[in-house]
Length: 222
Image 1 (cartoon, rainbow, N blue to C red):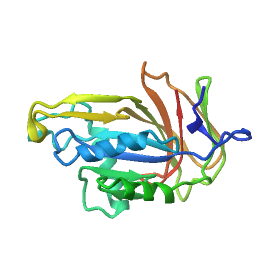
Image 2 (image 1 turned 180 degrees about the horizontal axis):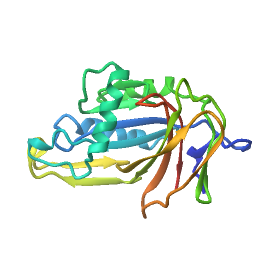
Image 3 (image 1 turned 120 degrees about the vertical axis):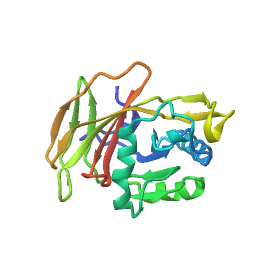
Image 4 (image 1 turned 180 degrees about the vertical axis):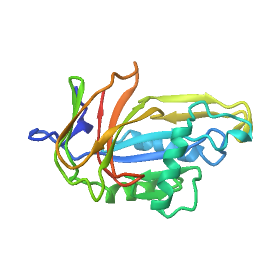
């Protein structure tokens, strides 16, 4: 069944506002990243936040290849930067609802960004029975993207044997393993096939403005 974060199903009497999506771009080869990893773990305990950890690949040359890193995660961060006013990607970086960016060291600052990015005007998302239903709403000047994210809901400890974090065991929370674009959404109600998930992982759906635009809606399913 859909989790409480899958709120705002049309007509659902117990609908709650959708979560704020906080994406951390991190790397096990980055000595500055562990404090931001810890902050994401703290945020992952909040029911009003969907915390997602994306491991990038551009620090792999420093001597340790991030075991979760994928080029498509790096590309997701690169796509964000022009809209966020950044000259290029860096770690650690937290992106809040696709709208604002911070380094991620200061948990109080991140919580301030979360508080001002709560939205209740996005389309409803209903998950289950092999399908995803996105309700009617405003897509913006262009069609929005519909993303499927599969992530580990637990905390994973990774021992690092080389590079800047040699000898440390780094905890990671809500590590993303798969990211796939399911299609586009033009503001009209639409239904998408719901691919089967991987055992032990959770699935999230993001409705997001094209080319790294703002996240309009999000939902998770067990």
